[in-house]
Image (cartoon, rainbow, N blue to C red; front, side, top):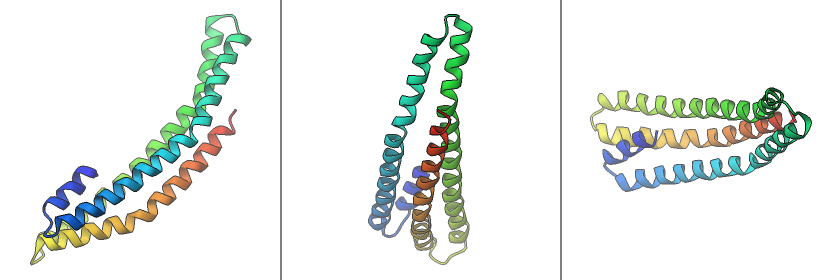
Length: 147
């Protein structure tokens, strides 16, 4: 989506405003990702601690591997669910920009139409970041409960 965002800004009659909006949106996304990753450190630690205990509890390699695999499951489930949520957000934003491209094609001033629509996509999608972060925290809580 950032590639598409740059394209919109490049074709914009007011590229500076669009670039600023894109940079601000990107900064908010990065900040959110950092908060989620920081929150996930506890989950990763629990997984590593669980895996270490596998070596204390079992002496056969197959048992250790099975135990360690169970310890990794909550982390893998969390990461998969988070990736799916992220794809949903990205697909929604891309869909909005694709709609803008379609609308701009028939407009009297396609660049201005694309900028206006693209700026609206960014504005409309900002609340989705908070929802995404909230869902990520719920997924994390769910994953932590597996330990």
